[in-house]
Image 1 (tube, rainbow, N blue to C red):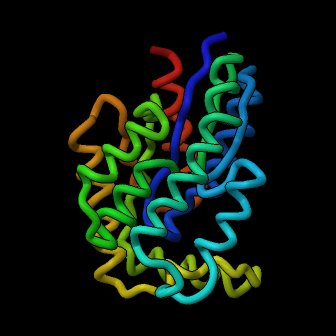
Image 2: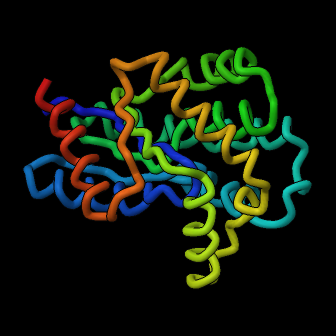
Amino acid sequence: MTGAFIAIEGVDGSGKSGVVRHLIAALADRGHDVLGTREPGGTPQGEALRGLLLSGADDAWDPRAELLLMTAARVQHVARVVLPAVAAGRVVVSDRYAGSTLAYQGAGRGMAERMIRDLHAAMVDDLWPDLTLVLDLDPAIGLVRSRRRLAVDAIDEGRFESLDLPFHQRIRTAFLAQAAAAPDRHVVVDASGTPDAVQAAALAAVERFLKR
């Protein structure tokens, strides 16, 4: 069986985690060997960095340090998780990948896209997903959803949710620009509907890709 690397991207609160869980279960039911993972995270080292990057005050990290830590977590993730799994014929479904770095540290923080892409090329041999689903949602709606979830579940990962709406609007614009620039590797999914509808649309897109 041929392996594949699929990333799920989108603004905070767009339903990525639910889509990832649904895809893992549905693809496994269809006979695929599926691995779910996330960024930052996916390895013990990446999870430790996740705790540092997603919690605390927004000014805890200089944007350059934030970029390097995100990249360090990705180097571990790609080397220890993604590449071995794909080589073994598994379908890897990741909650975020480098598209988020271009959106958050690039468009959001104002760091140069060329520098981010050059760093990505040097550190992970320019590995990009075979397919990226962009869950598209008005950030004003997404932020309400995400902040509510963090509060209800008592999760200390709200560092980016603490930023203002214009920051998150830049994120959305960046994701849509990435999809428009590489339509052969991206599918934009309307994430404004019910969770069931969004998950069904995401699964349909992945199934179309896997049948190519």
